[in-house]
Amino acid sequence: MESFDKDDLLGKFFNGKLDPEEQQTFDRLLKEDAAFRQQVTFERNVRKAITLTERARLKQELQSFRVSKPSTTGRAGRWTLIAASFAGIILISYLAISRFSEQSAENLYTSYYQPYPNMIAPVSRGNEADSPEAEAFASYDMENYAGSARLFDQLYNSGKAGYALLYAGISYLETGQTDKAIRRLKVLSNTENDFAPAARWYLALAYLKDGNRQAAEEALRSLTNHTEFSEQARQLLEAL
Amino acid sequence: MRESEVIAAIKKGSKEITRKFYLDNQTGFTRFIRHRYTITDEEIEDLYQDAIIALIENIRKGKLDELGSSLSTYLFSIGKFMAYRRTRNILSVTEEIPDLPDGLDYYEHDDTEEDTAVIRLIQHKLEQMSEACKRVLFLFYYEQKSLDEIAEIGGYAGKDVVKSQKSRCLAHLKKLVHGKF
Image 1 (tube, helix red, strand yellow):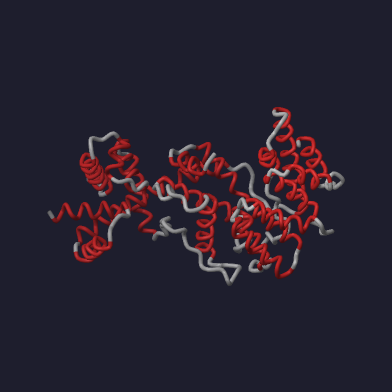
Image 2 (cartoon, each protein chain N blue to C red):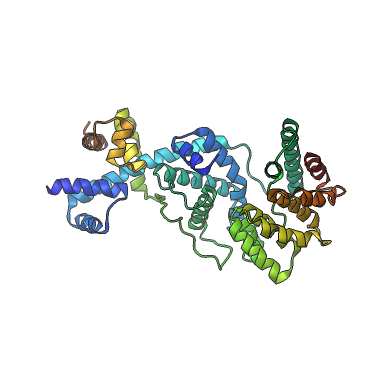
């Protein structure tokens, strides 16, 4: 009888399913019963051996996925990346548009939308990491948009930094709170801030998501002469 | 592809989906860790792979079947935990000491030399065992499957059959390790 109990205890232990009472019995046996202790050690080692073998196999598999080493993307590199991603969006949208002559606003939103890259936060070592700004961007980079929305709002309220409105707006777009996104993006798009064009672009997308084509068109028209956004603004206007 | 589908695919061992998940999250992860710890890019890559492995382990054990947040969030939390364990060097003093997300586990296995030799021997002897034995032991010790689940996966008549099969395999392995074969 006793040996059956021990087997079950061991099984539950390795399944991670001991209840507190069983855990007590397990601990007692571990202390008092040399044969039991030896068996636990052996099985633990078996688990370790199997785990390490499998981890080594997985590690090799993951290393084969590596295309290139991740590297610090400098400011110029980041712009290239943005340009490339917009080019990609445009191409995809063009293909989508040529296939369906009439698209729903929601579909257009989905094909054009992607979150604006983090252009502000210090991403390299040696920078202040515990500033509210860094915390907000860390959440944003982690795609924790509920958190970043709150943090960017706080950031804007304390310092009135324009970009905080932009990133708060995008965060709210991500969490599906389109009305909150529109309110923030609208404020920024009516300023002379460096990020106002980006705000207008996302405002247009937010209106699209909301099904308000007319307002989206207005926001887009204000962008057709701006270098960063003119191309996709024109594309999107044509699609509307 | 929905998160639950990604989880199901990784659980089944889909190399393609694992690869996609790996590549999709690498840049964000690297940026996230670099920003918080004093650590080289090579170390981050190594850490990233280990975090992915830990995530896969937990997926296989069924610990992420009821997802509380997104898979990427779990991955980043695991990374944060591992980076802290490895560097003990946190840039932000206000940040809490990270822990693994609730319900997840990961055995670090920092071993003494003596232990390592025993483990190597067991790894070697395991290779000599039958496929059936390897399978049962893998499902039980690595994936933490219950005897009932193993019976279902392996097509055994019931959990008692699995239980005796497991005992036989374990006893055989023990003899192999202790040089009695």
